[in-house]
Image (cartoon, rainbow, N blue to C red):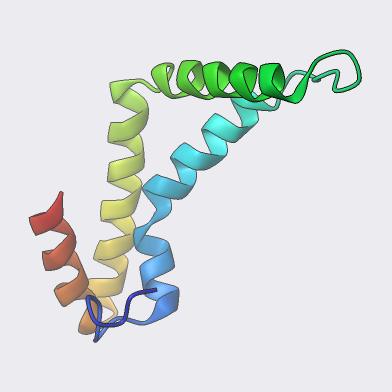
Length: 100
């Protein structure tokens, strides 16, 4: 974590803010590794190329609705933090909104 960019944020709160990224990573990982790769019959170069194609295809299956639901979940979690008076979250939220 780059503390110069996020000086007033706690690591636990930042990890919650990255739930969209974790969702996307987990979703793509599940799609890419859902099928078995036979390492003994294919050269490593072909395996890497196949994994790359699978990763691109997995990202392409992410729909707008999935991203909107994930964003709503993130917004809900931020609302909970705001209502519990976690003041440093406001600075993180402002930074995220400016960079997105």
